[in-house]
Amino acid sequence: MSAPLYQSKAEFFKTLGHPVRIRVLELLGEREHAVAEMLRDTGVEAAYLSQQLAVLRRANLVVARREGVAVYYALTGPRVTELLLVARSILTGDALAGQSVTPPDRAPAQAPDRSTDRSTDRSTDRSTDRSTDRSTDRAPAGCPRGE
Image (cartoon, rainbow, N blue to C red):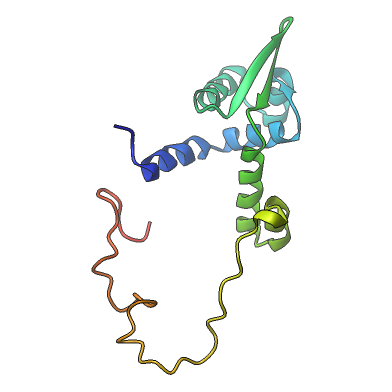
């Protein structure tokens, strides 16, 4: 039986949870890079970079190819770059950066305007507002509520 999706997501984000790996992915988002270039641009030792590249390879985020004595790395697809752009827009609050990631034909629908006055008693209308009853809102085992 495969792991639950939330657990797989956690493992995926652990893979991304290292500054050198993020920097490597940013560099590779621009274009393919030789290991020698990444050594210069990251400022880490060769053995350390090799370890971080191995983690990214095992996660199928990067691929390597050899040309003579040089080894070149590239991203396995453009989705990693999109994810990093979304992270940047979240961290910087830059709404325009987030808009450039989602093509217009795939943009999520606008949220309904909830600012209008409602005449119904919210304590009895549980179909749309669950803020008063959290008993059915359970986190998966091993995950604290709210994370």
